[in-house]
Image (cartoon, rainbow, N blue to C red; front, side, top):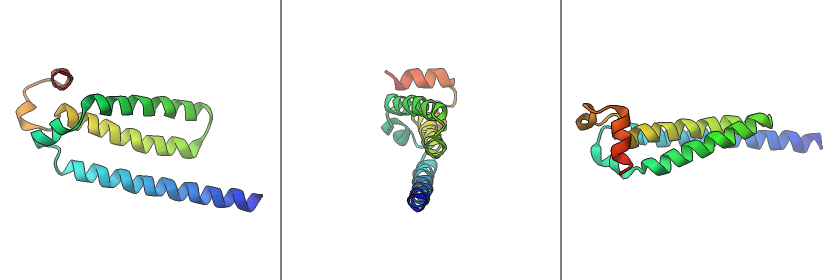
Length: 110
């Protein structure tokens, strides 16, 4: 039984490693294009906000349950969704620089 548990821990650790690579690849792809207005408009702000907040809720639940592997995984996705929120709001778009963050979010939610 102990061998099976160790094997499962190994595969869970491997899965977290693969998720970290996946998040990294998604962020770097978006990072290169974050300043392009069309890219900003192509990301659903509402969808990213929903994903961000539901992932936080799950993260808190797993924190209360002390499921550390899952918490690490949730933190990876929270980072991605937070970055997507900023990109979707147009935070790095030059034409949007004269607006405040709240105005950018308000414009994206229309």
